[in-house]
Length: 620
Image (cartoon, rainbow, N blue to C red):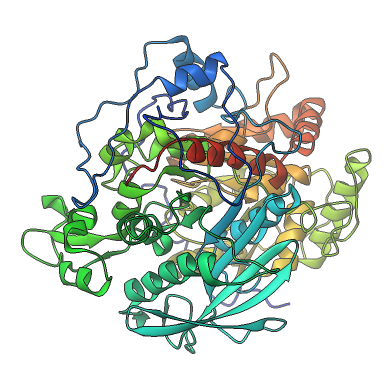
């Protein structure tokens, strides 16, 4: 294996930690989300059992009396949502509980799911631009590769609809052609893990470049390509014969990120008015609100929507963002806005992120609209694949281990990792790992900013794995070349090595400036590696701060996200490692005992589907 140590190491790059800092989130509690009041009966059910009435528990009663929704009127497009709608009242004891959760003092579990089998079985259709293992650029693909099988295992009928970017093996042509937006699409199908994996076939997907672009940049027709996907998914539920019957009129459509955010729009604007999918509901899943699918106003005409639905997608750039906007007035078409405006429910990938996207610092211009929908907004933590990330059976690590013998297993994996990377084999030295994209969001600059202090004044070994910004890649090369006995910087990504670092490290760094959910901290805890994370989004929900007085916590968190706070937290963690080994071991044990299964997340999604099915459509 070759390391990047050829650059001169006499000069340190200027990673001082003094980078421009975005305004940090105010220390406000997230809203405890629930259901909204239903002004009328739910649509009749035709292909699943009737929805069960929600129990009259104090929590649900409080949630369901929080406020009335606005209903879009037939023929008038979507109702305008007030941007001045206040946040949910904070004058209650629930606020104190929410604050403790937001600050990491308690585990966040905003679901009311029964750990047993579901009482209502749904026809669920996930619509997505990527799905592992067929297509993946990040966490979205992992989620869609794991959550649908977890729901199928609980008895639901589950379909995933994604583009066919390549000629995938073990898929069959379904023999169905459907006209959509003046073109014709086909479908290829594979059934595995209890899920119907459906791939939409059209030449716009079968391109030699990547999913969203090539070496020349993003594809100019992405908005249209994914509009075709959305319509194809809705038609698949009605027309695609799977196991002897289509999914039918009564489905839960889960639209993932902006690429699928037109699903609730088409459902409300085209299908329901035509008498189709009347029993169906839509759930918009926001994985990363930063990406919204914003295009020139004239592209609205390509979407096949009624003209009076333009307001649903119309977007006005704030004055300070209008440089380079499509018109002087800052007008554009925003597909994510359309999804938020018309979906029956909105869900994000963590409770903390559900709160953050309602703030000016985390809402990316959508905070007012999301606050007006707070009663229909939930956050559900992602799970992880417990088969792939299991120290007892992981084929990538040097020695398997379990919670009962993890101390010996960690020591063996640490020694083997040090040997493979050419570092001195010293069991008493803490090994610190960083695995992630090298960019500002992930806080890689903070890791490099701490390198000089960490590697010159602390007896540690630092191992980084990632790729991204060229200056940060060069910083990793400088670090390894300057401290050859203490640091390794692997520029690139390697799946086996990511598993080896997770198993062999004592501490894992996750200083992300924002993180909707995050997965590496969940992997680390499962392997007995203690995370150090910025208290944001899903990191705040999953990494509970160590409290030496009552023996709680699963790691360390810091805020604000700057170099001083990061370095100070690192110093505290190292002191615990060196001088309080019993406390450190207990941190490892609590992390390994944490339930990060997808089954837990699936139960909470079931509750959201139940709420969506009980209420009348948000947009009629």
